[in-house]
Image 1: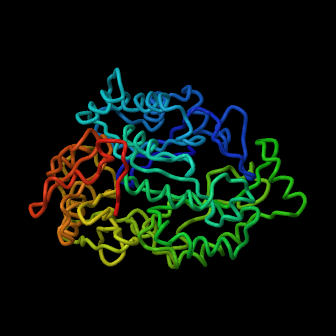
Image 2 (image 1 turned 30 degrees about the vertical axis):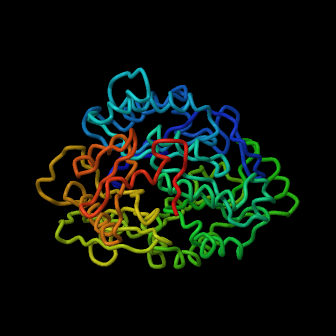
Image 3 (image 1 turned 90 degrees about the horizontal axis):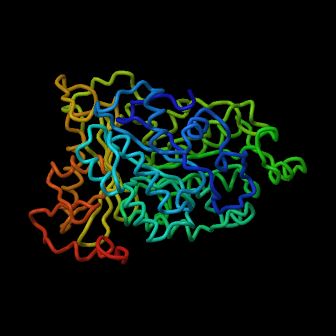
Length: 468
């Protein structure tokens, strides 16, 4: 199975696809196959989506069946929606698509997206994270408010390179200025920010790629929460259309990394990648028989364990097979993620991470929690962890939340707020947060003022966060 059942990150990820549509880009390296979204091929995941008519709810239904999951059992779901550029799609289509997913989890049909959202509060199966992929030049304040309305928690943007000359050569259609603007906007609205980076692009070189991954990427104006790294590939022409890149390859004007060269690059870069970053991927899942030139072999990521300090490498999932963690063995620590931004980690020993969260200070009055997650084997919602072992339901999330609140108190913040997934909102309400509008929750510390919310007009109008 291309996307096997995994419960080891505290939830189950469901890979889903939007219907094929134009993405708005004209990238030199991109490939396409008729009947599927750009930059994807016919595979087990896309066939499932196509067979479901690209319907969000039916795709979930097929995934539940394939994974042999039983509904209404407290499953924590991670929606991972792929296909073209999410923000490019018609807004009413995205509302309907999203409502279909919530309706499936709620085990009921709703008349509106709002009704489906409200039913998530009491549904047994919960959407705890919802991530989408889009282009940075297609995001503005209006799109961010739409993402909030849909319950999206994570936005992956196709940055590809932070060198303007490389972006221009590849006809990417955006520059680094749009990446900086979009990153700031997404943080202000409370989203987790993920960059998709590509190395070995035409017009680039090893030195440019290395500088991008070890220096430029971690400047304060960028510094994403997570990254995906992909080597540029040439696929065989019997599978996809990729004519412009194929022409460059045949003329000797572009050559992709070999597997050995790519591994060498990563080993040189990993030591300089900050520990607060989660490296989600280092290559795409494409069958070797489809690849004409470039990295075809699957790379075992554990070969980088000695040089990597990233969250993926240090997560309990990849550090040990013994998950019998007890709460008195965990400590909470924090590290800077840039100016007024922090990553909090639940640690066993000095290295192994069992959960983490991210806190940003937006002004002298307010802070926002942009992420909070507990790793380990998923326990269903409401399940009691009587043995007090493993990572889940032993108080790790509550401890991380308190540590972030205490840091806000130390900084004399008036209030702290969060935009949780619809399925997670109830958990925060049980810990003292309350709705300040339909989507955001806030907590007013004892030392603070209750009118600080007035500083953030974007919550109740079309004006964005000031952030100053």
